[in-house]
Amino acid sequence: MTTEFTAAAPPSRRELLRAGRLAAVIARRGAAATTASYAVCALAGAAVPVAAAWLTKMLLDLITTGGALATVTAVGCGLAVAGLATAAFPQLTQYLRTQLDQRVALLAQDELYRAVERFSGLAYFENPAFLDRLRLAQQGAAAPAQVVDGSLGLTRGVLTLLGFLGSLAVISPVMTLAVLATAVPTLLLELQLSRRRAAMIWDLGPTERREFFYRNLLGSVDAAKEIRLFGTGGFLRGRMLAELREVFGAKRRMDRRELITQGGLAALSAIVAGAGLVWAARQARAGALTVGDVAMFLVVVPGVLGAMQQLIVSVAHTHQQLTVFHHYAMVVDAAPDLPLSADPRALPVLRRGIELSDVWFRYSDEHPWVLRGVNLFIPHGTTVGLVGLNGAGKSTLVKLVCRFYDPDRGSITWDGVDLRDVEITELRTRIGAVFQDYMSYDLTAADNIGLGDIASIDDRPVLVAAAQRAGVHAAVTALPRGYDTMLSRMFFGESDQGDPETGVRFSGGQWQRLALARAFLRDKRDLMILDEPSAGLDAQAEFEVHQRLREHRADRTSLLISHRLGSLRDADSIVVLADGVVTEQGDHVTLMAADGAYAQLFQLQATGYQLSEQAGHGD
Image (tube, rainbow, N blue to C red; front, side, top):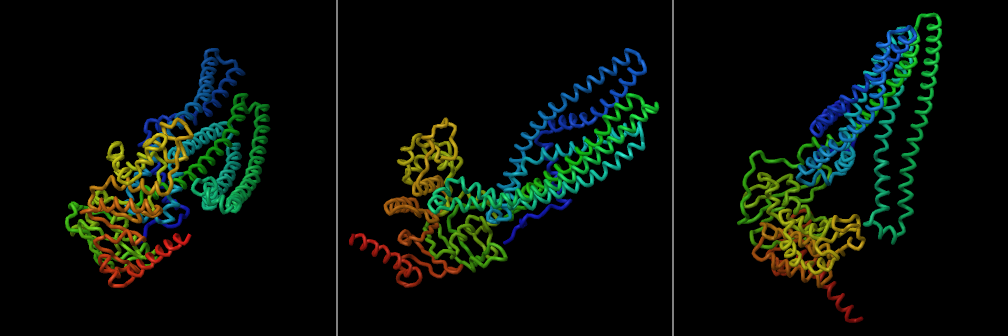
């Protein structure tokens, strides 16, 4: 089983263009009026410097030649308006840009996580290349507004440059060519620097992400115990600093290259501007240029160089943002990870059972087969226990039944209906589960239970009933705010008001009971999957949990996985998986009589308990 996600590589020009189109669409949908207003202000701002230069020339010429007072006043008022616009436009455009950033980022985040929700399986989320791409996409969610800003900056720079060049050409075509002769190599060299910087940013991406990983690890509450017990803080800090030194070293080399190149270009520009100034002064002395021409020349030459610089910055900025946003586009445009039926069949209420027929599965073409032709029937209203050593395929089988993956060969049917032919969401509403790697949410106790069934999240009596069945109600009510207590020290809830006494961390066993309560919200569903539901519990808690589970499983269909074989003794059927195939099947009595792998494992565990008990009596 493969996906389209592979290790990230620099995007092609075609991919950048596709990312640019998507950015424009998101900007238009997220803030059409704001985008239009920002564009008008930004482009109008391009004309103001050129207009100011011409008005300055006209005013000085009118003053020196004795122009009419009304004309001088009108031109002066026009220059004042241009000055007002010069002062006002940056403030207005900054406000509009902030609004654009916020509104577009909101839509972009929504679109990104809507796309992530469409990935109904686990293939992408167990693919390191996709996870790397997703982290970059999260950074790129703010890029659409930046791409719009860069594109407008590019347009504004071109318009300002053309306006200044046209103005300069009126004064002297020869000087225009001289300035262009300086500006063109400046543009080319700056673009080369921009490409090198973009390449450097791309190459440093993995290094920066490793530094970020070590930095987060050193501040992580989950890692704090081991880091302090094992004394690994210095080692991890050393790795973090090594990655950071590599990043800073590459950036220093780039900064040095830019300093030398841009210093040389600035000196060249200053020489051309100085030579132009001498030429303009001589021409004015000879009467070939007016005072206004000289004044405009003094504005236009730096204006051309400034417009060129703005062009370069906008090109580099837009290219960088498109490169980042490319990852976003890759995630948003990704094909579904599981094929969806064009004409889904209705999923019947489970009456007969779930059947796996010759099921083969592996996680990719490069991985070995995890399941090798599994045939298994889970009858309705019974409990089937699943036994096997680590790596036997138990968790993979559960993933297939939940349709987190599809079999490479064979089929899984629900009362004769292939799971691939039904709506995935409909299938999953029929299943309750406690997974071995259950989640501990940094939310309130009520939310931690209610997430098992969103429809019940605000129904406190239902949540309390589930907690009581899981044996965690007493622990929750003993919390400072009961069910409204935050089970986290990461942040405070709205009702906590910053009170440091309210953030509580549950023990592992309490978290497991909370996960069980979450599953009990779905106790009326067709199938309950219990994957190591008592792992991490003490003996008394384990007995209580399994007693409650036995009550729950009565006349219901359950798939129970446990390494503690004593908890499977009363299962209607026990299935032993080994090397991806079913090797034994039957109830406890039958399998013990067969004296196979199950019997040996059971006797081994029983002997261990007896030895522990004897050791305890000896003490």
